View: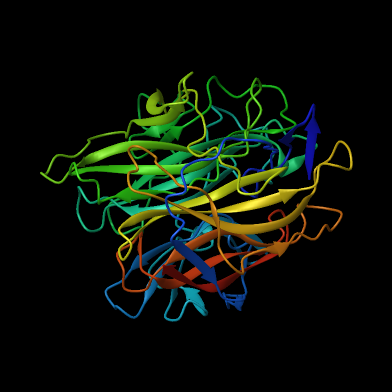
Length: 446
């Protein structure tokens, strides 16, 4: 549900679910991808281990294994073990993208086979001592990618990091959210624990170079109760290995859920950090992110610090006329088209009834670009057969069919797709019961 004020919608919704904001009347952009169409199949049921709950809770990541017929699938969620729920990150394996099992040799048995977790759970009382870190109550990946400037087992996790203390009457629909970064050197089997290294014990933004906040709002979280959700949320990530300069950049599309002084804009935002280059240089220590921001003439650039800088949308063409929200973005490179593709959700809202703007339908859209450095995205285009109604339930966010859509093509390098493949996504309530489902996709160039 959206709460509208003076013609603008702004959310009191949990950012790890969806941020539904109002955007009416934005300028059109160049329609450079109009010769390309994209469609999906009807929903295909996915079978996951019965102990897993709330899967998926973010975007899904895909990594190849030593067996070319098997793919590791990294999901956010929780695992019910011995009557207790553990979160927030698990590794599954699949051969057909319909049937999934917990991957062997991954996960900590003491944490319900999770590979990554926050200092405290959402259920933990807020009376703990010490600094409240940026990921204190929730830490789950929007993407896990390989770092091409390092060894084959070196991975980067870009994750949603949430603070929910002091507690709000809105529960999980209120808090402070940032984009976290973590590294693994052993193929994702182990990740830095939420334990500060000497010298940064009192820094709420980091535990050291291996686990820290990369993208945040200006300022610090208020010490009093938050009844809304503020921050930079729902990230995914893409390593650009096609940049003609030879530089490697990590791009992070995300949603701006608003701040205490600024309302959200219902569009997709972007940050990037340099990893190194193809000549062998690499960035040591913490990655330095820059946010995309447009100047007074509308020209954008990577001009703002990822930690605390201002920001603006990378596309301002609305996916549908009227009240809508764009989000859940993912970038891939289409090897056949030789273009970058950004897929995202488009939620149509009904703001005619008064102070609330309930979601009416959810669709998948795509846009293409020739340069991520320039962010030259074309006009948003509907992915055919992707529109589904959103059914109100009286609680949670309603029943949705298509959140966190994550696209891949078997046999392609992570982050690269072809003209066909799979998409995994959420089917259900982003704040309640949900399942993972699949669709096949087809891209056509006319």
